[in-house]
Length: 338
Figure 1 (cartoon, one colour):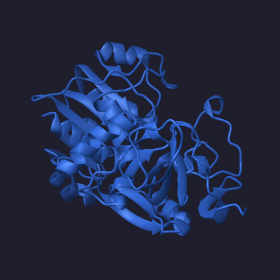
Figure 2 (cartoon, one colour):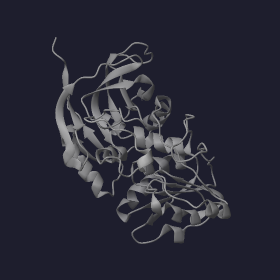
Figure 3 (cartoon, helix red, strand yellow):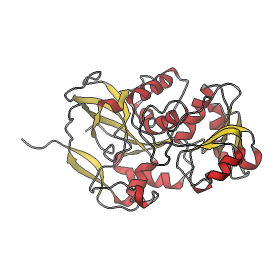
Figure 4 (cartoon, one colour):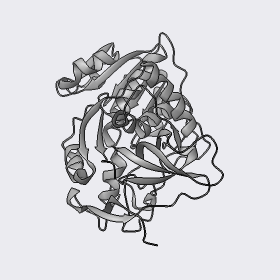
């Protein structure tokens, strides 16, 4: 019996967007606890281009082993094609979305079909299409797990203490750096949903977009340094993170916290002197949390913005778009019916 095949993007070597090859590969078989999803759309995320590049942004000692060739990607929205053994709650024909097998490297989402653990999936919100649903999982769950509920007890590779989201409410002030991006625009909305006052930091082109999402104050980082303008903040969600993230420590009040999405380097003596904490975590797949987020999307209280879409075969162009930066929302790959 001939092997059933599909089209997918594969990496045979690390490098620039040109190493993303559009190829014919076998359709995966769902194992116990898994469903086979016919993919309609795929979200593009920073770990995708970190992986393509060889994970050079991670310290050598934290780089997982990568076995090539491999299919990148984690965020999918599509329709259940087949159901493996020991799966309850999903049936053939259900529309689903999810973050597949993260933080592992086996998501294999840049493809026409994906075999995904049922626990990583949730029913797609009826009120949004597959393109918008595919833009949600990693970015939405990152914001959710940083701000609402961790949802797991796995240790973070970046810190010894478990991350504990701060209680937010009316009267709290939250600064979101990189507010127009995937995690940023979800974080802004989730903080507003808790009653917090939100200061959004991004380039000026995104001001009207962020004010529409509910930002109470906007700072154009190309014209001003937010750490010189803002003080007595309860929480900073820094979706950019990295080496310069420690500059936001001076915006916090005593008892405040800095949550860097991409961890940087911080001086323990400085944070102790300021009376603030720095805490991060690594997002993990969680279908139950995604279902909660999906209910907010269905109600229209949270929305996902799409920066641009590209056909699956044009994944390289999508990565080139990502490299240019100033992304508003999410980049999504569309998958034609096989």
